[in-house]
Length: 457
Image 1 (cartoon, rainbow, N blue to C red):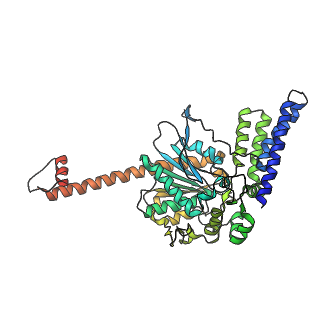
Image 2: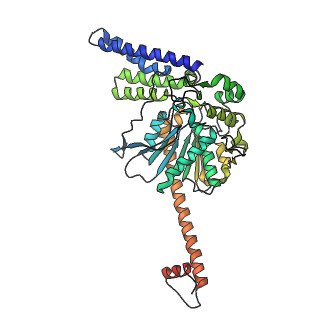
Image 3: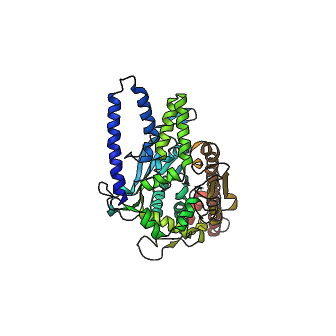
């Protein structure tokens, strides 16, 4: 078991780090130690995260945001819990809408999207899927695959929609497929749709312009993935014995497959350090820790994703059935995105996205044919990579403003629809009143409506 060996090495490195830090503090008074301490601090900031030495994920620490030129307090708490994921709410005073941010279960901890949450708090309360490290989930919690993912999101949406505020769904990367799946299934059950749906950089049809990652997933058999990419959690963790896609494999992927993102964060750190800007340096350090905060993925989920998303492309083929894999028996329920209506849809892609190929997210435009054409919009962000779609300057300047416009459009459309529905109901009620009146009578509106609901005169 490689997992046990890697974890043992991490324990040794943690012990070495603790000893080095103790020695550094003991020698801090020596003049010659200043340079050595600075070098050690730089090493700890830039390279230790890649070794996975931190046992805990960094906190969100969003205590307040700047809003309309003032500091606005933010309250953070878990409002729903499952063994594999918490629904974490970030709220501020005087909000009139709810934004459900579906974070990807793709290796990164949800804290990587801290900046996304901070921006969306300007629009309303943010409900975020905060994934729990699979190594910490006991075996008796059962399996967690795509079926269970969809079921979990369904329950989370139910808990958010209890307060009657407009709800907006924002799904990023891998989460776009289960998010669209659950919204389609809810529409098929005649449940009210959200005011808007935004799908960002996700492999809804991985056959289109496949990325390097997509090609690797499509060309390796499930048996190969099971034998080479899935390991068993060793003793010492609550999830001992659970099969997972471990973080140490994902760290290699970050360092080798997507080095440019890490290099850009190092450059940001170096620039802040050279300027002597303490605030910028703290922000750069936090961004590094957030990006390198990883978690083990449940093995069933990883293999389901390889199979359903990349190899068989079931959603794109119109043959994805939820409930067929969960062990409940039966063939499951067919997912039909065309059932989704009375909402607005935005799909977002970056022209330099090396994770999700061009057109894979915009494929939802055709899948969701039940949504009116003028309520479906697509956004292509020129020169933007995958991570820029939800963090950094491109997210702040190009993507988020379009989301805000879609939020307003969705709520305006909902208001017009409600007004039309009320007018139609009023016309039907008045027509029904007229049909029950004796010739020549003209009751007032209120008495007339009450007469209809009681026994005929």
